Image (cartoon, rainbow, N blue to C red; front, side, top):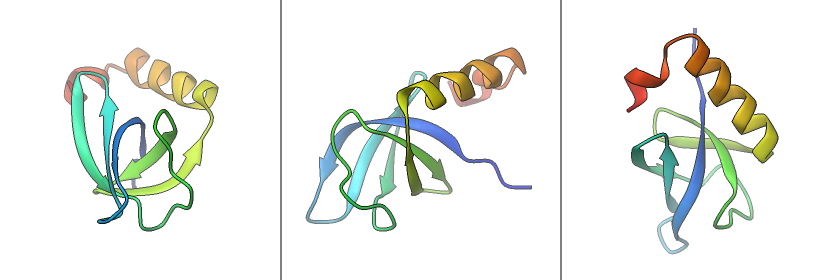
Length: 77
């Protein structure tokens, strides 16, 4: 089973196709090579260092809420 988590884009390096995303209290650098038109404030589904696609803020919030209810947010912080 694979797990992709939502992260909010807080920094972008267009030259290297990399972005810094925030997930809870953790910031992670991820590749944006697979997703077009990434902008600051976008929410991305991320898996093993790669952004897979964009999602809405609402979908990100719902997913993070479910992770929190399942007790998974402590692992990400």
